[in-house]
Length: 276
Image (cartoon, rainbow, N blue to C red; front, side):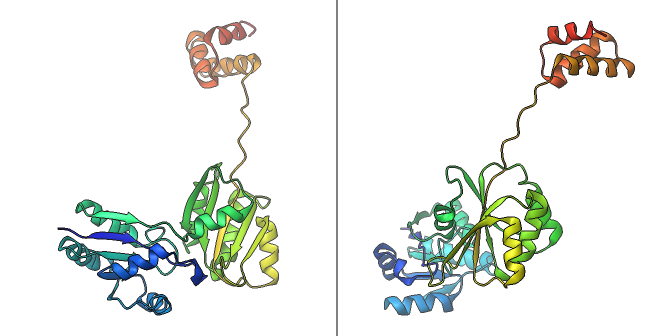
């Protein structure tokens, strides 16, 4: 009989956030697949758990993934953990979950610490609709393209960022979203020096021009304001018909095309064209 894969969330800063169910799952698993075995070993020592650890990270996920799947199919139970938070979220564990799903292996996700939700809930930004964008590229062109695709996004946007990349990221965001776009910078979540700075992109750039950013950040950026719909008027229709006729279209074809372009009833455009 095949075993199972458990996704076990680990504390994002405060070791007290490990749940009893997570602890029990780690104790009961046949082996643990960890993003960094050194980090996980510290957690296991804190919990008083001794368990076989397998390294599973970005650069060995293909080879190790096949090996882990074969062990689970042979009947073993694997607990997957990341360095912090919920595995498979902006994490190589995503690939292992896909492999297990393709192999017909049951995957069980245990609720627990997640920096995305923790930051969103205390950000002061709208929480009804949001999107998670993970880490932005270190390459300026790729980062800019990513942000340009989000320029008109109306949902609250959440990003992960490292301190040494924060200034460049804020600059790119200000260029694309505008310097007055609200942002909440959530730093060192659940740790002793947890901090939430609610400001604008310009305010954040000014702040970190004076002091170097420290700690891991979750950036919660307000979505774009809905664009006001501008309705075409009969005068707009008449002008468009005139332009199209000057370009060589017949009156009939110009009226038809104008009605489609301006989303106006054809009879309204026809009446407007009579004023020409």
